[in-house]
Image (cartoon, rainbow, N blue to C red; front, side, top):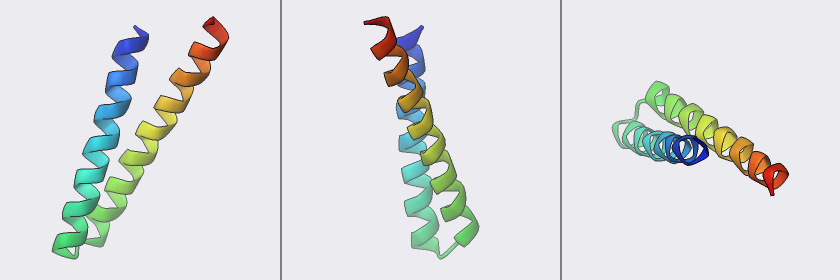
Length: 57
């Protein structure tokens, strides 16, 4: 299950980066902010998984 969550975190990070870049290109502040939020959510999920791995090992 951990690999699934790690993949999900990566997907959120990538989706957030893309949304942020598109928002900047279009001059859409709302889309840029949403992209940053998604990227942060992915980063938090990834950090959680890394911590879980540390305690498993």
